[in-house]
Image (cartoon, rainbow, N blue to C red; front, side):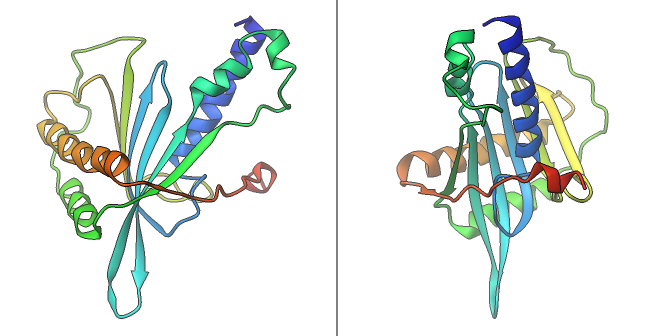
Length: 200
């Protein structure tokens, strides 16, 4: 990848990740929490849980998986010649899926996450450039208003002072992975992003 294309891809990556952090691509109800997986060389995945109120019933919790197909988009800028075959500005390849998970399981995950107690500013003993970064955001707001109430981030594994986070991730991963593999997911409509409106 040439320097110009490399720079363009980095800018695209930063923009997409920021929008994924704020579930901008999803047209859904009240956001509850997000588990974001940011690998160095494979697609970025955001698992978002939303709460939809139902008249006369308990709230319905749903799981949406957002995937940025960085593997496909990086091929579009692999060489200057290949870049010419694609539109400007380069549009990210985003996949959205509503996954089939019992509402009660997602509600329980939400409660367990909200009840975690951990020290702020825990030191990490592992460092690196490549690999995978992770983030958890609790009850985050839209990108058009205030930011997340709480966002944790780490590289490779959570700090040792956060054992509850690791246990929660293991439980969440079982539920998320099972929903993505055993039951066909329902593609969602991608909400258009009006960047000019967001800057006003």
